[in-house]
Length: 385
Ligand SMILES: [Fe+2]
Image (tube, rainbow, N blue to C red; front, side, top):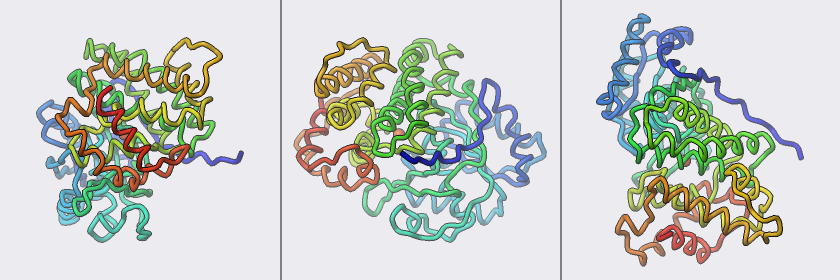
């Protein structure tokens, strides 16, 4: 097998790393910075701390604090317009996946004409590289700081679309686990399970490779051993460091190997029912693992090993899939991930979104194809578990 390992984003990792933001941004040649975050990060006191750090390094800062969850196309176009009017020469994004995806998409619009919709995957539009982009994750989940994709909510079609390329890739990731210390338990859980899904889907993806396998296996092991600790005691810095590291490793893994059916479902139920991304991934994953087990039994076994499960040696692929799926369901329950039923969704409505799951960009990377009926069965498994 001949594989190519994609270039990984340079990262500065460790407790207190964010205090070097101003210095690092200056080293990258920026003078006037577009700082992207949301209101929650300001309320948590994180944005002001980083902005002061940038200003102390002599940088001019233009703030955009209007990030909306699951960033919609119109908000990105608006932020891009402001950034261009202000003639900024780089971007700093501080926040979770929505903020980092916004920062990436705005970077695309700094060097390419609007609107963002013309750069969606599959449309074939040419894209110039962006300006320097520094990302600081404040959750341990999305891994967006390490990936080459920005996920945008397409309000015309009610789908999520990817924008992929150098302009949608950070120049530097600054991963400071101290920024995650104040995350409430339910966000710690959903973002942590997003990272778990990145790793489990990367391991079982059609695009899997030996490098992504190693990274994903380590990420699953770290999350299994640290997620509950980080939820129980949010100030447990060791657990937070391990979770941030796991999210980073899983991010590199799925940037190469790509995610599949779990994310196709999470994207679809995210746009249709407004289910938070990490929750959507977590509730979809057990059924997906069960479904693909006969196609990639060795990989499902690898997930079991990474989770520390002791399974009998003579299991059939189907039995193995069920055991690992049940273990993930158990973890979901322990960290309080709700099922689709808990969101008061009509079960009968699931049939209407099957086509959107099949059309999602991630669906093509599953280790086996799925019919409309099989996708409906996966959705039903996520409905109540
Ligand atoms: Fe994800």
